Length: 181
Ligand SMILES: Cc1cc2nc3c(=O)[nH]c(=O)nc-3n(C[C@H](O)[C@H](O)[C@H](O)COP(=O)(O)O)c2cc1C
Image 1 (tube, rainbow, N blue to C red):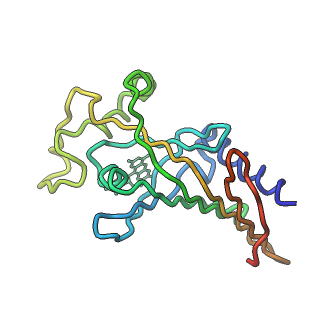
Image 2: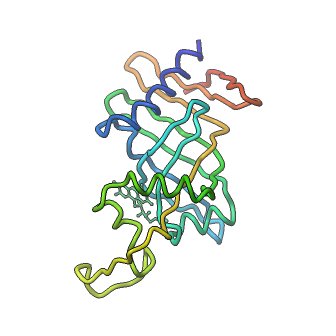
Image 3: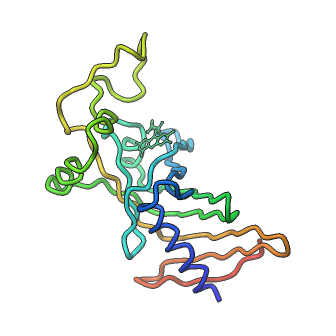
């Protein structure tokens, strides 16, 4: 039954937000660039909701935010090397607009980690010396991106036979089908 596989995927995505050593804690997020070129980067999974919407933190000035503002289709790739399990998630990304939610999240970030979102120059700017980076005393560049999945593809490699399934969101339900691996 595909239901069991869906539950495995869901539990892993939830556990990865609680266990810092979980292989799904870090995943690859693809956005579509201005010239339609794909761009990948590693990000940290900060939250998984019951409806499987996912959350990451970033700097508003980063390329991924520019891309999402133009085209909010994203693709995410999770890989658990212990289970040989890959999840590929298609979805749409949204920037959190609620200042209260942003402020609450900012308060919970450890001081040294806040630096990731406080550089005086925007991320990706050329610099002469990495030791000379300056930081602003503001949270104004901190952003939360929510990703609402529409498709989840599950692939587990096994010695005897691999298992592949595609889950598609139909309204509020997820419909699953096995695929040829
Ligand atoms: C282990 C690891 C975790 C990362 N986590 C994040 C993250 O949660 N958010 C983020 O914006 N960038 C994160 N980065 C940096 C991104 O991979 C990327 O270099 C940066 O966000 C700029 O991407 P962009 O220019 O494509 O927007 C992480 C990098 C590594 C190596």
